[in-house]
Amino acid sequence: FRMPSFEELGSLADEAVFIFTAGIVLANATTVATLPAKNTTVVVSVDDVLKAPVGLRGFSGQEVTVHLREPLREGKYVFFADPLAVGNGIAVRERAHIGADERGRAAEALERGYVMLIERHAQAAFLVALGTVGQVRPLLPPAERRARVPWSTAPFEIERVLKGRKNTRRMTLVGPVPASKRLPRAPALREGLHGILFLQRPPEDAVELIRDEERQALAFIAEPADIQPPERLETIARILGGAARIGGSHAEDRQHDSE
Image (cartoon, rainbow, N blue to C red; front, side, top):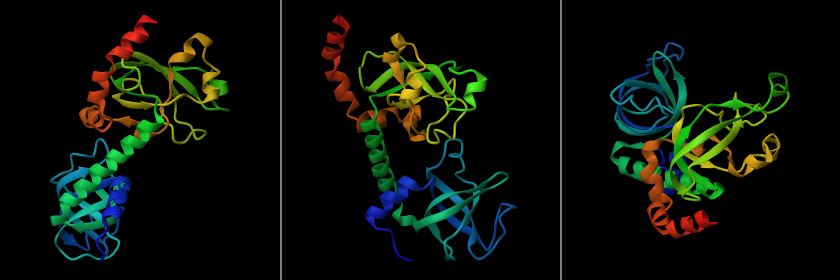
């Protein structure tokens, strides 16, 4: 087995859905009925979770099935994996692994990958802000939604701005509801969502549906990673130099307010 390089670890940390430390407890075994046991399936006991989807981060201490790339001897490892089955049990497909004693390297790669992700998405955004999405309203009647992107709008009430005009307190989000194959990367607007949004200008065909006087305050969520959980606020502020920008922006805000 070849240990991933420093650069490869960064890519793995960015792309893998799950990263966790676990010890193999059963070889040639499975905890998921739909996944048959063979020499490349092992049951592991999860020690700690470095990365997992929202809603699946609490599986530390549980037994999980790992579909390995090749048979692996007993021991503790850091697994980089993607979901394979979630139901009565959890099964994941291995992308790569390193020894458990290399956990620090994995955590460092994960943090570096997250910094790169945030910087990349912030560069594309005109506004990065923490807030809550309000009531979603369709812009098109049902008959027209079937033939085009089902555009809708929702108010976004802002608590804190990390990039953009610091005195912005409200934007109108434009997005599909439900999600549309005509715009496959854009997530559907969801009422009640509380998070940090990386906002871009909406596509022109959506803007055309909005009254002229309302077009200045429109924003668009381009892809799922443009939504980050509130608990990442201080981390993202640090990555973006948020504290320095907020402190240095008051004069700019006053200038805008006086115009």
